[in-house]
Amino acid sequence: MGLSYVEENYLKAILKLSGVPDGLVSTNAIAAQLSTSAASVTDMLKKLSDKDLIAYQRYKGASLTNAGQRIATHLVRKHRLWEVFLVQTLGMTWDEVHDIAEQLEHIQSDSLIDRLDTFLEYPKFDPHGDPIPNAEGKYSVRAQVPLSKLTEGQQGIVIGVREDETAFLKHLSEKGLTPGKMIRMLTNDAYDHTIRLVVDDKELNLSGQVASNIMIKLK
Amino acid sequence: MGLSYVEENYLKAILKLSGVPDGLVSTNAIAAQLSTSAASVTDMLKKLSDKDLIAYQRYKGASLTNAGQRIATHLVRKHRLWEVFLVQTLGMTWDEVHDIAEQLEHIQSDSLIDRLDTFLEYPKFDPHGDPIPNAEGKYSVRAQVPLSKLTEGQQGIVIGVREDETAFLKHLSEKGLTPGKMIRMLTNDAYDHTIRLVVDDKELNLSGQVASNIMIKLK
DNA sequence: AATTAAATTTAGACAAATCTAAAAATAATT
DNA sequence: AATTATTTTTAGATTTGTCTAAATTTAATT
Ligand SMILES: [Mn+2]
Ligand SMILES: [Mn+2]
Ligand SMILES: [Mn+2]
Ligand SMILES: [Mn+2]
Image (cartoon, rainbow over the protein chains, first blue to last red):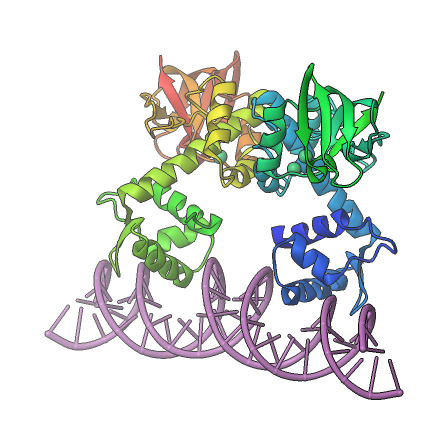
């Protein structure tokens, strides 16, 4: 009784949005995440609830059951392992792998993904710095803070991003702001949130919006 | 304007069945190949004809147009390259890769498949001995004959099979009849088509049915 | 040539996933 | 508390791909 790729995408969306206060994800939030209508979401929430993959109360919201969480986490594992493969093995750039991984994550074969994990030597993080769950669904956590929160003089290392869009990632590549790079904050304007910092001995500017999507490990 | 994976499977089925006399593939042949009903096939043939991917005359049969052939050949290329990857890179056995490749062949990304080809060092044949079309759709042909056609005393090398089923491939693996192996025909019964041959200095029996699906390069 | 058989198409229904528009429930304002 | 605004659900229609059963065309037999 496998799930359709559409059902899988809903589970993944709910997992991604689960960071809310009471853990209940709203219909509209899911609709926005999946670029679909609220009506479609309601239909699917009923369906996933019938399959006991989510707990759903109408007008209240949805949360993953243990079964649903297991499936969603496995999808994230597959997505991120494939991203590592595409960058590390095939030499793609980090800005072109997300859309392909969105397709590859739906390939059904546990044997395949475990062998891929072995071949890649059990990577802990994907090219965007996101943790890769192991076969049991456990993953590493790292202390990290958005670049936008750093104060003047603070230093750190770029360890990831919070955004998958190609345009955003290409923008960072052009500025040299990729994972592993050491940065130092020069000025962080309290009012308009414009940032000036140093990377590779070069100074550059960033908007607060962009900086909030870059994750830093403090030095 | 991409095609659905269902449309892609129809094009691939028609290509596979195109070895018939006048090149016209029948509705029933496609239905059998895809394990679907003749009525469904008729519906899809109309649709593919409207898209100019096949030439179709009702009650007569279907054949691929140049556009359809290009797409179908590209699918075969992807399928076989992924099979090489699964066996060569991930260490799977040749009997477990076909079903996974059936899924992977529908991943949409030209960049991905060209990089995979480069990574695998441009293989010319897949694990089952089938030729891999290059990016332009051209592929190598090898002189080959079914094992069932060999006469007493003839020798040759196993270079491929004509059947993807797991049970069939496992059967051959157990008998040691895999690509690259040298064989010598002992007896080929003209009436019941039972075969006795030598592989690795061991004698073994085969049914005519099984032997007809093993391809040999004569020595 | 007429009849029977086989292959193919058409007709009509169904499941999955989607949409828009309208109705209902909840939340926010006055 | 009553009104307005927002969110969510329901109703009904649409697209894609499928099915079975009946009708039609083509092929094979007598
Ligand atoms: Mn991604
Ligand atoms: Mn990622
Ligand atoms: Mn195959
Ligand atoms: Mn093959």
